Image 1 (tube, rainbow, N blue to C red):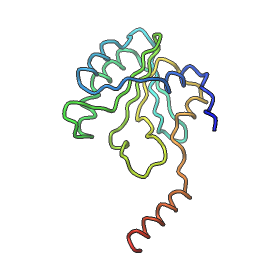
Image 2 (image 1 turned 90 degrees about the vertical axis):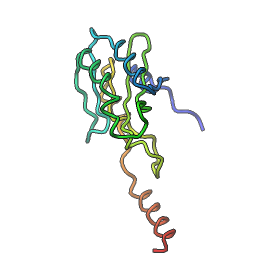
Image 3 (image 1 turned 60 degrees about the horizontal axis):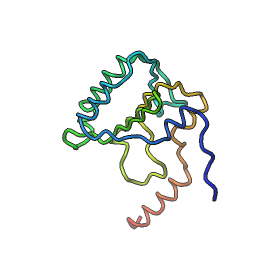
Image 4 (image 1 turned 180 degrees about the horizontal axis):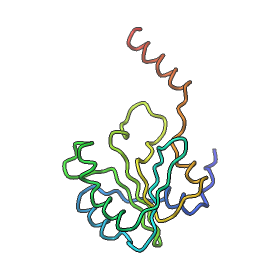
Length: 156
């Protein structure tokens, strides 16, 4: 089996590249202070249907949102002061920040990686790139097979 071709889209290259996890309030605060205020930013909602949405933001708005993420995510998990759900790439002056909703990152019966809750980026993604980061559609056959196995285990 050969590996899929590497993306040539600059946004997808950044999005799928190496990202650093922010595991503490101090790490979020440090990243927030480095947000380039003069840049145009884009907030992507990858889970919007039927297609991910893109909202243009100022650097000041992104800085405030990143600085407030720990408090926003705090009620969604029990990690004390840490978060563990934010990942950042800053490559050659271009940024991607992926924020995952902790309640959507369980290790259950999923068959794909969780989709980010929000993505902040300095690169405006193309429509094709937005489609590439959207979650896969549900597979009714897979769900039916899982349901049948679960019923069998429960004796129903």
